[in-house]
Length: 106
Image (cartoon, rainbow, N blue to C red):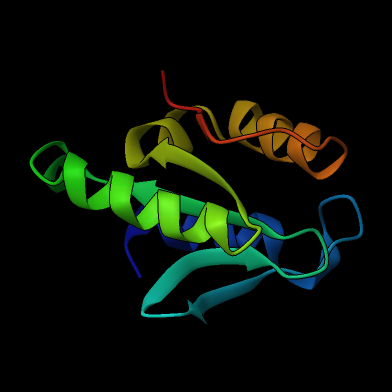
């Protein structure tokens, strides 16, 4: 795991957020989600700098996940490292609402 993934996992594991169980490295079709709350059909993806070059791939991946009924939240690693409380707040909001794809790092 990257440092950002480790930090977020430490905050999500053990039903620490909204009493929801998250899995890490959860397979969904041909993809592996960084984190997933199966009960809420929520996927959380953390993106490093390499994702700027693979935006089309990420869009196809997100579209596939959405077609499977998953909501996808994406955060930059830097956001997790520098604003974990804000990231957790956005995730908590998503757990309590039925919303569409968001790029939370913007």
